[in-house]
Amino acid sequence: MNSIFVIHPYKYKGIWVFDDAKVGLAREPFISGANDIIEEIVSNIPNANKGFNLIFSATPFPGHQVKFEWCCEEFGGNWYYCKEVAMKGWLCPALLKYFEKAPSIIYAQFKAKGI
Image (cartoon, rainbow, N blue to C red; front, side, top):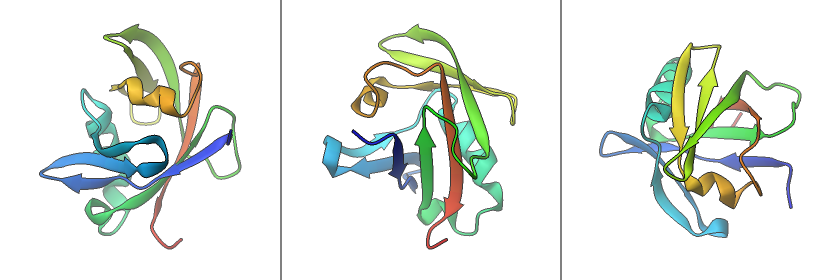
């Protein structure tokens, strides 16, 4: 199993979503604050709504920009706090397609496609 993952979120009908055929996800939405966190972080990425690279891991990696700290479980998903933008967001049970259990910290990098 990989320790670093890459997905390519984009906007669909005003909501941030992503597809990952390897784990059986199509137009999986970011909701409950996670969409607001993405909106804030990608505000300086040109054409981010058409797609960007989101690299994430449970361990730090060179170039990570933000970290999400686990807060609690709710409705089968998990709440995370991002100090860099002072916001909290919920990640749905699809998180467990990438990790055996919800990590205590998720490190992430948000990059324009092609970089």
